Image (cartoon, rainbow, N blue to C red; front, side, top):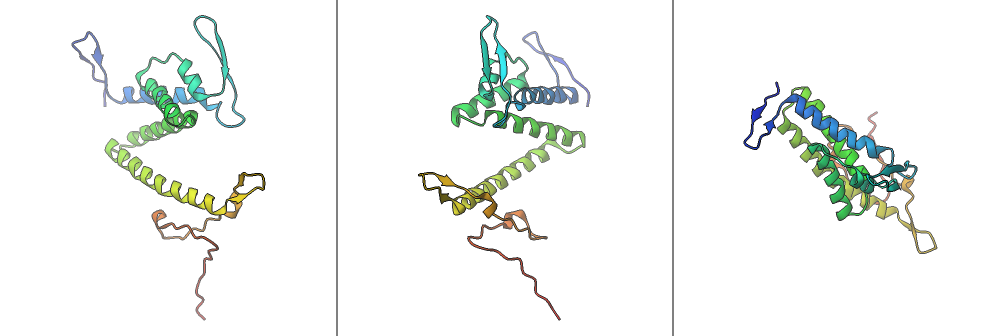
Length: 189
């Protein structure tokens, strides 16, 4: 697909095609790379200096992205996504930017393999439904193993949760078993 540029009535131009899609994905990945090293409990701090010389040292993704002067439209979408995540939840801004950038990068690879964007979107929607299903199951499993620590808090011995795989079964057929589950085979002699 070639880039098509056509004049607009506002003294601008319109571009489309593979190069534009690739630039958008690269811009999103650049934003993710900026905040990626600040992720987690051992994330690195960033020192940001603004136009008037004020220095900010932080490892908070929302703060880093808010202080950046991002001009690229696709990169702005990720910055706004992080701001929305911060407003709604108050945490997870770095994670949401990294996940969104990876989804865009993977979608770009699929488009390069001649998979139609509508099919990619359908796949992402299906995965989103499965994510809801499994996130609820994970929360239920964590609640099932929760024990008090004697100080008014709670402990979650995650190693008490085991996952058994049944070959030939759909992931949607997964069930949470309260107690013990054994995978048994019938022996024929």
